[in-house]
Length: 360
Image (tube, rainbow, N blue to C red; front, side, top):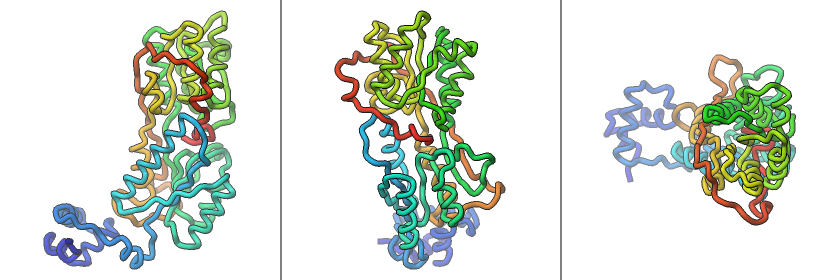
């Protein structure tokens, strides 16, 4: 098994330089760092993570709360996020510790214990909401963190709050624009009750692009709790209007699947319907859907926490002198307009969306 000394000889540098490349790459000249990295890759060298943790007094671990288990379609987004975070963290010789909590207070209690025990270096928050007390506590305590979801409702941006989010407004706006370019004139919206940071952003994208006067837009807009049965119920009401929609865009794939069921039951199986999150269910039944770029979300999360390379956590910033957030653009995944026929009890397919709370 190759050692640090083997890497140093291959790269023609000192043992300390190899250590700097592994632990503090920012202080090493780029040409030297690249030469050492090539030697590491060629030799297949892997640092001893346990020894490094003892030496640096860092756990090389990221903490992440997992929402309570619930049935649902769009929970697949969180599953994909966690898997991608684990994969990309492993490439940096970092670990991900997952814990469960019943709410924000319980989550903060877990975070306190993990920090007091030096078990975790930094945290990733999921599901930000208006006035989120978790982010303020982490800022006040100087605990490094990044949230997947922006700080909704803040009167002014706080540079100490690093966040990554997906531009749901742009994603929905693009979907509606595509439908109108193909001839749709009355694109309806099915979203979530306000206030909802994520839901309100997505609804704003629909209003910006629908091209309808305010009264007509209000008539084609519905808000409901997330779920397949809920989506089916409100879509049924929309399709019964004297001037029914000729396309429907939804805030989630759960709502879109319910809308698809309503359309097929009303004899409009070819009605264009677009969801959000591009879940496996959407792909299976042929629903077009807005896809969140989760690989980019995770890469940006780790970069904000640890820099471009390495595993040394960066403290929460004190000013806007360095980038403190990333807003990523999703893409529309278009599928066939004639959807897979659906039968049976829609409730059996599940309901709920982990993004229903104010997250991305």
